[in-house]
Length: 343
Image (cartoon, rainbow, N blue to C red; front, side):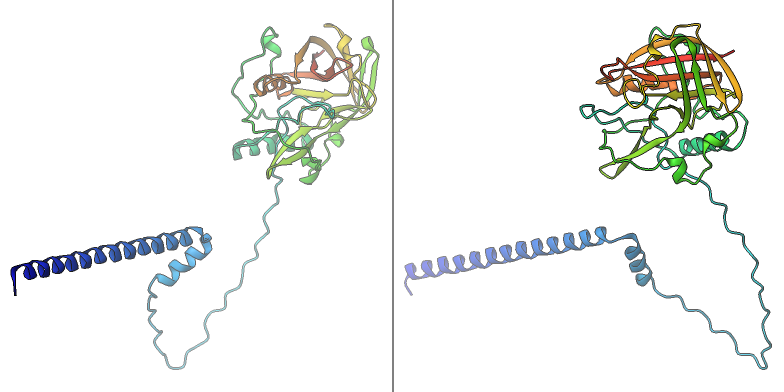
């Protein structure tokens, strides 16, 4: 064979060898990619399984333990008979899923923004609210304060009249869908039947004489989250059923409309410091003297401002009466807040 023929043969052999090497590399890369895809698919399937299926798979993967068979005995006698002990069913307790709102009562007009929601974040807050409601509706004793931290008081207001309960964390505003009040849903007794529940409010200086009825709050829902907003009574003054009873330490909160549905608090804005307020619980009369009147901006304000405004209706250690309504008469942009102390 001539030399050029040997060179061509070597070149063809080298080309064939290189082709085999590249073929092996490509096939190996494809196999590794398929293996990676298979492992990833299996891992996603395992992660998407519910906990019950994972627990069942773990049980099946665990090798069974052999249990020694009992030794046979001659003439076995009857075993002892166990008498089941009677167990009493647990006592049901009312639990608040959604607590009372921490914004001031408001009248929702078609052009008003949706209300700011309230979320109860911890079980401790829920337990404290449960205890406060049970004491308010079932016992004549003073209500237990729910929270201890002292919030920053509103500017230029009487420090002795500022409530002491800070509001919880807020979430985006929801779309309103009415729901029954939590107290009725929980099967608790009506607060209006409790001793010391207000039934009538009289303020002679501004010509207010109205029936008082207990009100709660509506549960509203958006994006599978629930929130709450205070109810406002129609043609009557509404007493917040979670606030203090008359004659007991705490903040007794009442609210009413000023330009719709009876306008019971239309002239509340004209009240003056020093005016007397009479509240009746059945046939018992409780007298108060107005110590503060303020007007705060509510509509269009950021959530921090509305939380600070709502501190006026929070629980307190002293015995006081707080009245709330909207203002001015042609709109609902502000809130009139009147604080009176027991004579």
